[in-house]
Image (cartoon, rainbow, N blue to C red; front, side):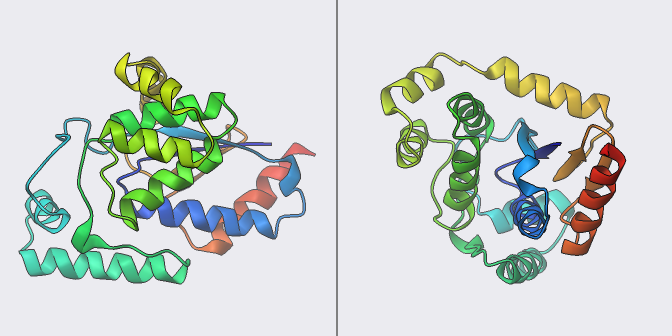
Amino acid sequence: MKIEVWSDFGCPFCYIGKRRLERALESFSHRDEIELVYRSFELDPGAPKDTESSIHELLAVKYGLSLEQAKESNRNVAQQAQTEGLTYNFDTIIPTNTFDAHRLAHYAGEQGKAKEMTERLFRAYFTDSLHIGDRDTLVRLAEEVGLDGAAVREVLEQNTYADAVREDENEARRLGIRGVPFFVLRGKYAVSGAQPLEIFQGALLRAWEDLS
């Protein structure tokens, strides 16, 4: 059974939702028959690669909040992440454009490393405070999961997999997806957002029972 996951590496709820789905799969008796497919979705396609603004400042501007309100909002998200065993270091996150990271993820998928690369990119951004818009950083991260650095650099420099990212985003629009994370099971059942564990467990059961 195929599960498609639309997400963005700069989306805090995407990492949380990813972990909750993984936890649901751990207790799912047919987990070995699940195909996970990661899809690209940019929350801010026009985001600059480099910015002097902190993630708190960007959030405040985006939603019309005070800086302290933005920090409090991020603290609340970090607490949610912590319940899933994730560490979010919002004070030192480096905001950036995620397009190259998505292209790298597509390449990694073709090399059989989608799961490892996706996890590493999320952790790099939220936990390690690495610049995932920087190509040298992306090459290092790719090498950490066993990909060839020279091949990755060539992919990044030649704009390879740009069409694959755009196709994922076009498919999201066709499906009416306006926010992420968004999970589609068997092309039929949808889970929107970082829902509680029980929601994912129930969706897995419904989708599988409908399959049989």
